[in-house]
Amino acid sequence: MFTDLFGLKRHDEDTMKTTISPEQGYRDFDLPAEHLLEGHHFVPAKAHDLAEIERRRELSPGTLITETQARGLLVAKKILENVDDEDALMFAADTLSIAGINTAWYSYAQNSDVMRRRLKLPIMTHLRLRSPDSIVDDVVEALGKQINRAGQLAVATDCRLRSEGRHQKELGVGVGNLSLKLAMLEPVVAGAFYDVGSSEGLSQEIARTQCLRLLKKAKNMYRNVKTHPSIAQLSDPYSDLAVYWHRNAPGSAQSAVVDALSA
Image (cartoon, rainbow, N blue to C red; front, side, top):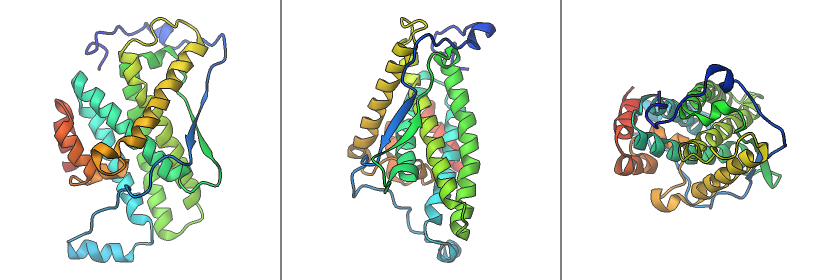
């Protein structure tokens, strides 16, 4: 889909399946427990519809935010499926990867009893991941899985099932890992991997550096958005992140989020 858009040539079928790893590189990425500042967290807006007010009263604590996460993941998936120009895709990938890594922190690392939680770096010696098309396709597929997982978490939270903690951890890890992969779009499009050849060490150093940049941007983005961006905010067209998106998104990223919210 985006291969021609970026002027990049897709590798032939055999090459795309090749994994070259002559030397070990970074495989893991640490999500620190101390990541986001206090006082800038998203809170779902109050309901005004009487039926919705009554429904929310019946929910167990924590269920509403898990419901908004599930809806936000669906919006994110539809956005990536519908952007059709380079500027829009790059804006969407940057913003969604920031919101996603923060969401991973909320689900997986906030209030942790350890200093950091471990995520998996994309293995950029997989030549398939050096294609913009493949990155987007993989992230869309991963979002579909996390939508289902978020729905399971919402049910487990509301019913106070013993599986709640497991679903929350799995959601945090899953959204965190797909966010790291989506962040690879920028260096791939910029040609950062062209000169590293088969070196796993160099490839993974680029990947790690990019993910550290993502973490720093995610930590500081509240200065532009007013709250820490998170996937849950995508479910609310009046949230700080949605307003930021409408004010700043280029091209088809504008219509993509409108269409996703109205679906």
